Image (cartoon, rainbow, N blue to C red; front, side, top):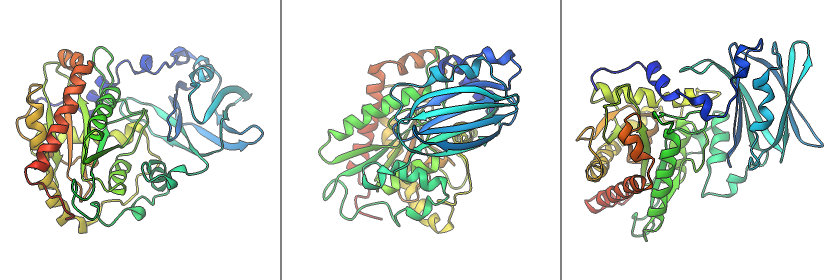
Amino acid sequence: MSDLPSPGRRRWLQGAGAALLLSVSKAGLAASSHIVAVRIWPSSTYSRVTLESNTPLKYKQFALSHPERIVVDISGVHLNQTLHQVGHLVRSDDPYIKSARVGQFDRHTVRLVLELKQSVTPKVFTLDPVAGIKNRLVLDLYPARNRSHNHEDDPLLALLQDYNKGELESGQPASAPLPGKAGRDRPIIIMIDPGHGGEDTGAIGKHKTKEKDVVLKIARRLKALIDKQPNMRAHMTRSDDVFIPLKVRVAKARRLRADLFVSIHADAFTSRAARGSSVFALSTKGATSTAARYLAQTQNESDLIGGVSMSGDRYLDHTMFDMVQSLTVNDSLKFGKEVLGHMGKINHLHKKKVEQAAFAVLKAPDIPSILVETAFISNLEEERKLRTAAFQRQVAESILAGIKGYFAHGAPLAPR
């Protein structure tokens, strides 16, 4: 991997065919309107509506009752075929949106009306162009009542709301491990992180296989295997096709006091000859190779691709974590070595040692964390394997074997 592509070129590879995959009409491209795409992402946590435009969009948003509706007036826009498709993009299983319609409110304003299934707290914001995606107007619809405060098994919604208010740091525990010894006095808690999601599709293979879908399937298989173990319990940073900011993924692991964190990916490269599995840990001193540095840079772009409305949260930016994190990185390398050894039994290894770089999603100061690149989705043979239930199961089994090996070979089982 000496001839590294630019991030823009890599994102072009990942985004090829995205319009077809998202069922977005292209008819509006030739129209006078600036709207070139409309996407709706429903999930159990929140639903997102994205309008993509050639130019920045100006808007006004308000709510109506009886029935519950969110109204967005977009100025300087005219109706086109792309906007007319919005009603067909609403899925019947969307927890929050019942229907969507658009109309030309006046000569220079398009009105978007979302009829709701329940009361919501909307968050509306704009995003600048990034990685081949044009200007975006984003509507995130959260349930008006925070159900997750009463359900410690999945605090995701509460964490997202804290993140949106810049308060993610305040609700975090002082240290992650629970009292008692993991696996003896309490279950070993594993946080599984399927990479990407929602607007952020991740890499896309030649046969239109999306990274975000493959890694979610592997993560679900891994969770099922872990939950069958008598002394283990698994959680997932996302359980469906939803965008979750990187810092929220880390925060969820700490809120649930995870003992290990595993982020699952399937990378792409401009050369389809690149193949093999890799395992990465965090580096606080610089990447161990140019390729590792490049991969961390592109993976850290997820927040820009997925779309976050703010970036000023100071979570995990304190120097007081440095000493604790250095110990954690050492444990992460041991954990990664165990998983890499088992991955080598089911697939060619791209690198035969655990590499390191500044991956944002691995920055929990007190949880050993690794990122597993299962295979190259840009490689035709490995894309085919990634699509199969057999290989997905083998990857999940290999990661579980690595988890067991890590604890069997003297991993710290008590709070640090």
